[in-house]
Length: 208
Image (cartoon, rainbow, N blue to C red; front, side):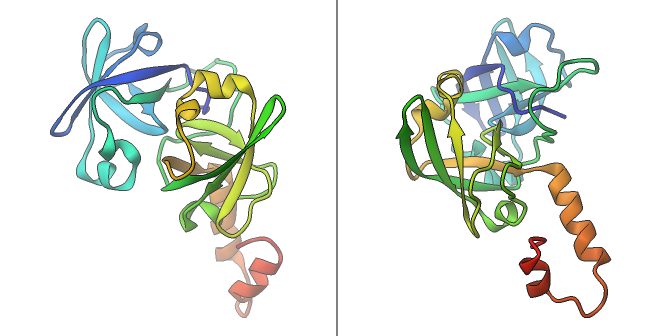
């Protein structure tokens, strides 16, 4: 389990078959083989450790369904260790299970803030609600104005400076994970709906 608060930005140093080697510092301070580290929002298992590098293995399914398949040496990635019991909880419940890959649609400067609009795949968009949570490239963000396939977020300068978002622009792909609690509520409501309640009815009440 993660919080969506990025601890540092690491750098890919090698990609060989399933192996992905990443240079880091903060997330290695107490790392051990078998630990979970979120890489751009993907929960990955550490299989090898060195002084300033850790290695994970990305399966064909992971590469297919996330942006990890496009990683090359030199790419920057957002990193977060799995949360420890007793830690402050400043983001939201993030599993590190990417639901789909979306894209940056537009960026609008608003003084000290920037309004970023993202295109979301159906497996993410259906769970978005105003002021709800969403994970983009491992970052916990608050949803603004969700529509059928897009949503916006207001980013503060610190978020842009401390994550990989500052290097992205319109058209760039990003990993997305919908709010875990929202997904459970959505499926519960659909399963608990009386017979005769249609998908359109659920949609009109905001459940679809």
